[in-house]
Structures are given as structure tokens and as C-alpha cells.
Image: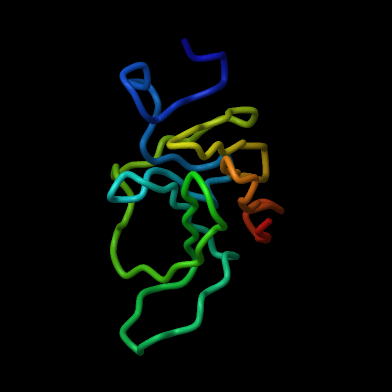
Length: 130
């Protein structure tokens, strides 16, 4: 049974949980990364990892698995499961594969079982990892 305002994106009880969602300001998109093992978020303030070649994708993405630290990514294609994000309300907690994301009016904080994660805040203008 899901608590009010909480979503779980995995399992049979998760039929109403979106695979892809955005925060109330629509400046942060998060959801299940293709492959189904990590959470992926995209927003302008997420820093780019160094280029390893000139043909790498766009900056602004971070993934988080059930353990370990967040990984900054460059992506050149849609890497979310799902195609149209649902807009989530402030106060909602969305969970998938050991990662929980708390959605506030102007921030998104995702944390895994290792207590590592990230926050995108300031209305989607700032990023920090922990």
C-alpha cells in the first residue's frame, strides 16, 4: 500500500507511479533510466563531466543507483523510460530501486541506500551532490 503523496515506480503496486516526471517548476526531469537499474535526472545546472571525445552528448544529466555516488553524464539521446513527464506536486516522494526522490516546490533531492545523492534547487538553477 502506498502512502499518500508517495510513489513507488517498481513492482505491481506501482501502476499509478510515473516512469518519467518533472518537478512543479518543470525545470527538472527525473525518472527511470533505460535499462531499469538507475534513476536519471536532467536539468541545466547539472555540471558536465569532462569530454572523452568530441562526439559525446549534451551535459546536464546525473544518474543514481541504489548504492554508490551520483554519476554525471553526457547524453545524446533520450535515455528515460517513458516519453511524457507527469508533473509531480510538492511534497511527493518518488522511489525506484533503492533511490528516493523528494519533490519540493523549487527543489528535487534524490538519495540512495548508501546515503549518497544530489539536490537540484533554487527553482532548478543549482546542483550539489553528497
